[in-house]
Image (cartoon, rainbow, N blue to C red):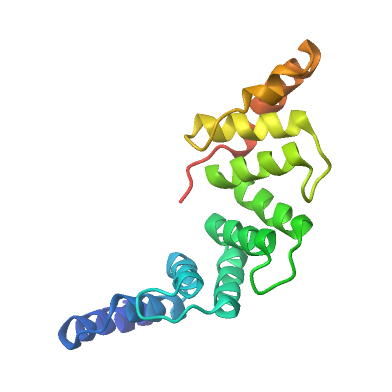
Length: 178
């Protein structure tokens, strides 16, 4: 049996008997390298819940670890932190970079956010076709709408390009996520 698994089992048994909180259990699993729990620990620090004080710098550290391990929600939260300038200078370019990583890994809320950033030209060059493609993918997965107002203003050729790009992105980036 794997040594880490054995340690984790012992910890769970002890925590069940000693009343260790859910937050402490998440921390223990995060320290063992659980990608999901590393992300969850970042969320706990970000919102200050489960007995963990709100600490943006700690949240940033755990989200970075989560993103390094390839967790799409870790990339999304890094985008969120840079977009709103929480404990870091506001940086739409970095936010777009992180949102794009999460979007390319199938996270619908990041696909919607990235599409909106292209629509508004925040952190990326304003590009209605790119915006419409990301918004369409996100809308198909239940995140937001296609923003028909922006699409309606485009030419027939641009609408065809949107459909082609949307289909290409679906092939590349629509995958089960989180």
